[in-house]
Length: 554
Image (cartoon, rainbow, N blue to C red; front, side, top):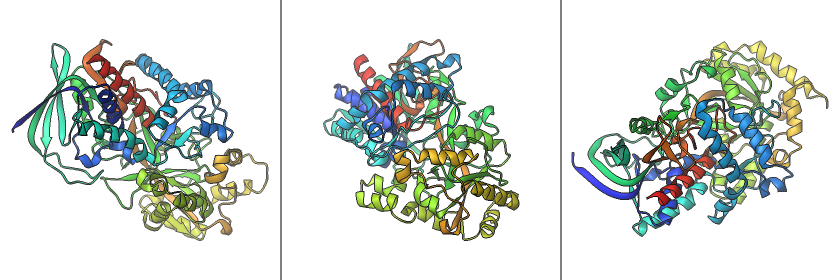
C-alpha cells in the first residue's frame, strides 16, 4: 500500500473534545498541529457532540441565584468521598483531582464564558448520594447544562481549530487509524497506521475498517486523546471488576462504535502505563433507542427522584438506591440479583416533570437554543417530544390505565416472566399509603419533599409527591431498564503536565495523553465514582493542560 508521510510540531490522535481543546491551545501558541482520527470528518467533536452538556462548577452564579451555598471545601469533601482513592496508583489521580477542583471553582466558567459558552439557569442535582456527609454523592446541585448541550461545548473549539486550519496552522486527517507509536531511543517521535477507505457515513454511524494505504507522521510531541472503551463490549467485560458483580450478558451502548479502546493497547506498547482499568462508569437506566444510530444504541434516562425502582422480580430497591442517587451502588446491587434488567414504575404526572433523555439529539430545545420549545417541553403539559416518542415507539415502555394491565404488559416483554405480580402490587400500594400523611418512614418520599425545597427541582425536576396509583395521575407507565455502557474511569497515567508516564513512573519523552484516554487526567481523576458533569469538564481541563504543555515543550 502507498505510504503517506507528514511532519508536524504536535500530533493529536483523536478529535473529540480533549483533542480539539489541545489542538486549539497548541495552535494558538504558534505550533504546527496535525490531528488524525479513524472516522470520517462528519464525526469531528467525537463523543462530546452527543452529550447532554453537563458541567460541574463550584459556587457558580447560577447556584447562588438559586440559593445554593457551595464551596471548594464542600466540593472537595464530596469528590474525595466519592472517589475513594485507596491505591498506590492514585498518586497522580489525587493530584489531578485537587487541580481540577481548583479549576472548577475558579477559572473554568469564566474561561468558557469568554469563548461564548452559556449555561441554562437551572442547576441540576445529579448523584444525590443519600449516605453520610463523607460518603458518595453531591451535597448540593452542581450539574450545569450548557446552552446548546454537547454541540455548544464543542463549537468554540471546533471553530478555533477550523480557523487555524484555514490559516495553515492545523492539518486534519480523517480516516487515519494509528496502529503504532514511533519511538527512537525511548522518545516518541510520531505515529504510523492505516489510511482507511473513504466513508460517507453520517455522524455516529459505524464506518468500515478497510485499509487502502498507510501513513507515517513525525512529530515533536504526540497527544493521545482517543477516548475510552464503552463501544467495545468485549473490552468492557474483560475489565469488568468483581466488586460490581458479573458483567451483564446483554447491554446497550451509550457511545458510538469508534469508542473502541484501540489506542490503549497501542499506547501501552510504546511504554505508557495503564492504570485503574477496572474502574468504569456504566448506567443502569438505559433504554433501547427506537431510532438507533450506532449498533445496540442505547439512551440513558436522566431521572428525577420519584419513580419507584424495582428489580426484575418486582422487589423495590433498598435505600438509598433511588433514581439519580448512586449510579454505581445501584449497578452493583442489580448485578447481584442475577438479572440484566430492572424497572421504573411511575405515573404520567411524574414522566411529564421528571424524565429527560441524555444526548444532544434527544434535547432539541436545549441543543437548538429554542426558548419557546424549551418552555413548552419543560413547563407545558404532557411529556417532552422525545420522551413521548419513546412512549409511543420504544420497546421498553409499557403504558396502561390499570395496574393489572401494566403488570401484564411488563410480563409480556422479554424477561418479564420473572416478574412477581403480587410483589409489584405490594410495593406500590405500600409506597402510596405513605404519601397520605405529611409524615413518613419512606426515605424516598422524605427525599422528594426535601428536594422540592430546592427551586430548581420544584420548577422542572421533581413532581409533587402523589399516589402513583391515583387514576388522576395516570396513566401508569413502566420502563424496562438495561445496563448502558459509557465511560472508562481509568487510563494512561499522566503527570500534571499531561505527560504519559512509564512503568518506572518517569515521563515518556514526547508522549502526552488527555481526555478519557487518560482517565480524564492522571489515569483516573474520579477514582471509583464520578460526580457527574465531570466528564466533559475533564476533557476540557486535561486537553487544555496537555495542549499548553506541548506548546511549551516543542
